Image (cartoon, rainbow over all chains, first blue to last red):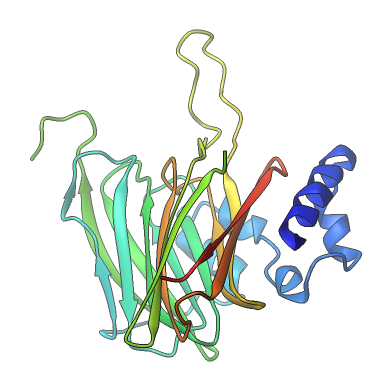
Length: 156
Length: 103
């Protein structure tokens, strides 16, 4: 029932073109306000800018407690399956493909009981490093993996 | 018909959610081959998943998520029969939501 209300409500917001205003008006839950979509981060064209936009800092240290499961060679850059697992106490997990026009693909905000695992599929314009950035406490940790993209090729 | 297909399964005290959403996820940089005009961006920006009243996952997405997005994650707790809900909102303000129960 609540979800129906929200749907109707959001549809109403389009008419005025101001979902953001509605968020400000406190009609949505606090979590949703905190999680306002970080436009600048998603539109930035460099990894550093994306991290700064998301976290206010681009400093991140490498960690072997983050594992990326991704293909070595992706024949179709439009669908690259990515899974990230971490043993760190993760608050957020972000996925970045550093050669994409907009490197930041996704940022996952985990609930307190949510495990350090996400799996999704991303688009990659060309061969690039996929970087997983985990925010744990007020520090950023990362690990990367190169994925070769061969769009339109016959494999290899 | 709902755009969301979701499975929630509890095992060993951990619930695994797997969801598929039907959505074009246009980046805004692709061109229509016939007209040569750019196809406007149209992608999901936020996916929220709740277990009961508790938010277990807020996914913020850019246009680089593949068409018809897939999302999977795990959270501790959750019993068979509990309600989980998933909702998404895209950059045009469209949204959809679906409820499911943990099996």
